[in-house]
Image 1 (tube, rainbow, N blue to C red):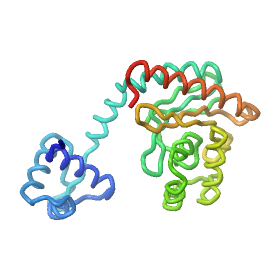
Image 2 (tube, rainbow, N blue to C red):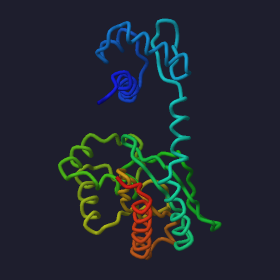
Image 3 (cartoon, helix red, strand yellow):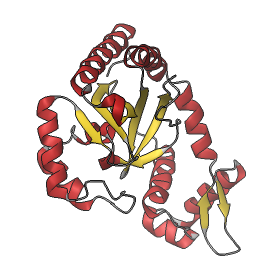
Image 4 (tube, helix red, strand yellow):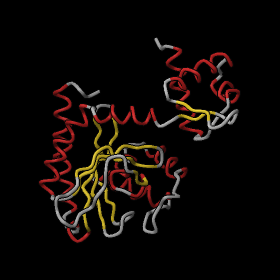
Length: 251
């Protein structure tokens, strides 16, 4: 049985996630289908705990970054991600390149973890950084988990405003690329976002999550190694899934 008050809080933050704009009490009450008194109590409580602020008097309310900070600390302690990190370190040692774990956030991929190559010339990224979902191998891997009809719809509605000049932004071409790569089992980013950098990625479907695990590095070291790296990725994903299953972390 769901708890109504909790549902209201979740719907409240989902509203701002979709709108991404300040909202007045009246607007919130209408959109959330809540009485004005309940809306006022919800807003007062969230403001008191630092999750909400009023941008100016009667100018509307907007969440602070407190929820983001709390969620980030939760993710940092995630036992599944801690397991993945151990295997990611082994993958970095085997390939010599940067290893990245990404999740989807709208039209973007957000890196949950990044183990940067120890070589002098390398691809560098940090946890929390974002990339266009369609332009990196891990993002394509995540998109591949959709049914074909869902994928076509998603690609047609995708925000391509952050594409680079080398990104594939034609929905039909992207659909072909992703579905053909799905059959192959791995995904390629051939300098589609960062100049002179390529990435090989695979879908990590674990503990009810669709994540993208990838290896990225300079083109001159990645070229000719795509299948070798994909095989290493596959072994790493099998190892992560096996450990999660043994630990009872799989859904």
